[in-house]
Length: 246
Ligand SMILES: [Zn+2]
Image (cartoon, rainbow, N blue to C red):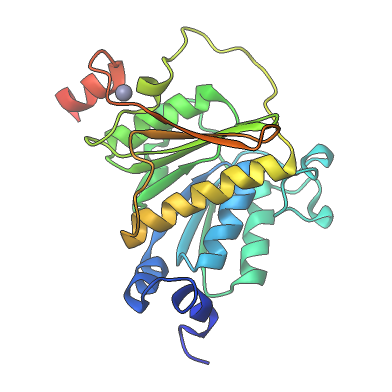
């Protein structure tokens, strides 16, 4: 078996070159959260052949996760989600190196978790964590692929420090966050996670046009995709701070 046999259909009918597949095999991608979005992202990255994936999540697998979080098997009920996700990847594609970290990102003490990773995929289900991650990505000049899914609606964009607006430029950070359960149905969250993985693919290979300064939204009930333009907001606290200090 050759090194690229597994990825033959990526390169022939899929339309990427051997050099681009090599870039995927050498890439390191950090997935923050392995719930609905994170499940789909990790599975797609493993299929693409992203060589190193780090999965960060503090939770354990619960019964009500199985309606949409396809990476977790029933036998892993009550086990850490990061262990469950690693197990899936190792069985599916043993060539991939998987790192795990069972932590909760609730303050800014977790900068070390992004060390060595070029791209961060935001698969959190709550905006409090998303804004913290947004700041971490800006500080460390990492590409951040944002995703969000709730009900039948979802959105995806790619935030590149110094090139695009950030999450707070798109949606102003509220002064406080409500504790609310955000969830989605399997088809909707898996459309969003596939789009996030596609963004990672484009950023790594240089193919196509990542969703930079573009927010792609999806309404599953209407079957509608829309692309909304945004740009860096000069009044944004994160972007202003990033330019001044980071
Ligand atoms: Zn901003």
